Amino acid sequence: MKYIVIFTPEAEEQLAAFYRYIAAEASPNIAERYTGAIISSCEGLSTFPHRGVCRDDIRQGLRVTSYKGRTVIAYDVSAERVSIIGVFYGGQDCENLFQPDL
Image (cartoon, rainbow, N blue to C red; front, top):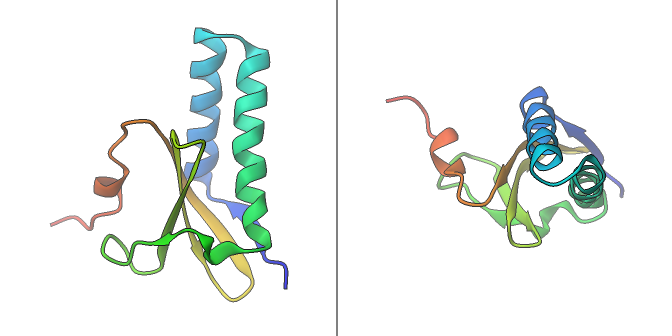
């Protein structure tokens, strides 16, 4: 069974910000290749979405995987869909973003 992969608006904005940062620091060509590879990695979750690490300790149903060990991809899986919730680079504290407000 193939799952449909969707990106939340927040994840899309994170990817766009990531692209802008790389384009400014390196080049638009490098930014396009790197963010395109992250998107391809996310789309690859359509065939085996449960390969990521389950992080129910952070948020029920949350799974995380990484791209090249530097980018964390946060997502959840439903009956037919993989929702990319966030894309975090390097040392970003993504765990706190998923904590409920106290």
